[in-house]
Length: 173
Image 1 (cartoon, rainbow, N blue to C red):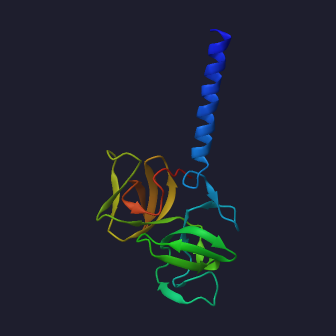
Image 2 (cartoon, one colour):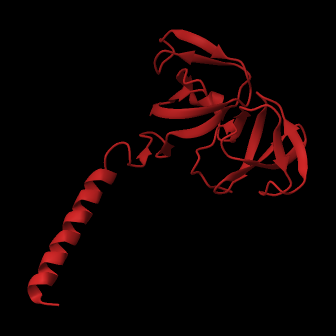
Image 3 (cartoon, one colour):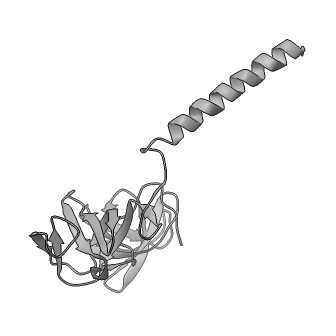
């Protein structure tokens, strides 16, 4: 390979790297972090309290728009401001909630009727239980396509996409 072709090739590689860097640093691609906690945004949490005021802004002086009345309900944090977290529920409704009302315990809400919980992350294994539409389950761990859920004393694995509270590409133990 001649010196001229190596130089041209290295220039093309540099251009590709430069363009990829510009694309992946845009807001849609960047891994955003909360200004208060330095935790990833958006991220899932759950309601610690059985009731929680949802306010129009991040302070007690802001109007209460509604009240969440379901303990362990999964919510997604989209912003942080002091002791306040902007959250949204599975319907996209949300507002500002005081951080003391939230828990890091992961939960998900079932979006299909009769969701099978399998003994292992494989649909050919035994069904341990079935969860009804609207059931809130604890998310114990997630693999690429499956999460281990527990509810009502039962636990098992369910394929992602049938419940809200976990990102499709999320993996954790």
